[in-house]
Length: 195
Image 1 (cartoon, rainbow, N blue to C red):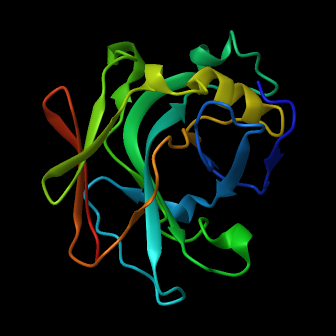
Image 2: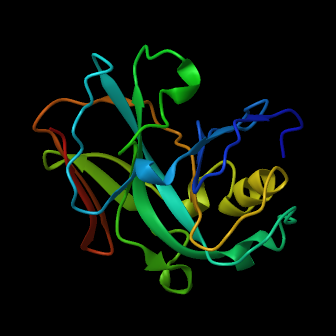
């Protein structure tokens, strides 16, 4: 696990990692309010406080047990479900620490119990029906267990908390009328229209 890291703390439900790529010198995460959650099927209305918005495709892991300072080898016991997700950030927003912590910024698809999910199973993300990328839990440079363990060293996880995995992909620029979907096991688990 990276030795040096930063995290923004508040009394919150969603812990989002900025990225998830090999060779990172540190893990960086920020905390989002529960009002940032945008659930499956709901559209995202681009707020007026920024001229443009970017999104990264990720996986979201739901915490189903209370825990703090969780060792990586025990962290899988705390993860109860997984879902495709999308983290949205406002481009050029000041202060920068709020650019990903506003209402609707955490788009979460349908959760699947972790016991029914194959970590090697890819989630396919598409924009307007055109496939953009595939992401599997097993392919993440920093595993879900590592992310949960890292975040739990700063605060207590409670049931229902959500961890965004971070993304190995470049962000996409959101445009009005864009429709983003995510499929796994021939089932659509996420759909979000940009307004």
